[in-house]
Image (cartoon, rainbow, N blue to C red; front, side, top):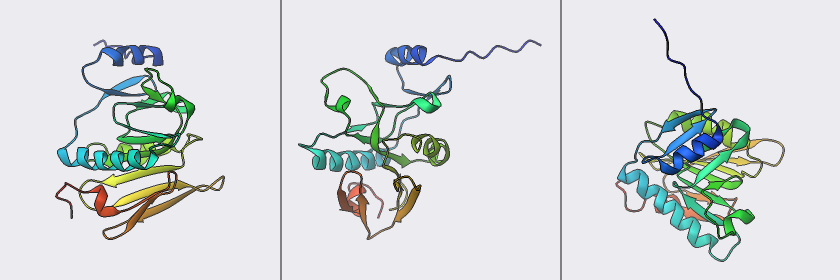
Length: 189
């Protein structure tokens, strides 16, 4: 029996493939992984987060993006599609057609059963290697819970959990809001 050879993609091949693909793919170390669609609840939570960030960042040299913009983690030869991210880099303000961010200050993933393990392990490990990243935020879609990994200078990362009734702080962009606002329009109480 002869086994088929596994073909790995270069980053350039992945980017060219992704431009014409009908579905989005994340890319890690030469392999492309198809992304599944999210639930209405997942989408609403991500949208609430994006709207909050966009409203707060208006007029500032920072921008927020939703899941159609790729995040490049060069150290891991990876491209991910975070649910929401914010960057204050000059490229965010350039009027060009780039679909890739290299230096976010904040990355948000809304947890879902199919991706939670990847968000908690692989992406946590990869994102924390980004020198620009100040906060990695995990938002549960099943209960009011927000987890934040916040960079503490050169000494490491602080882990914070917010529960129902708490006021959530995204310190990297200076946003504070009641946790319930992230879940507005959902059935999560």
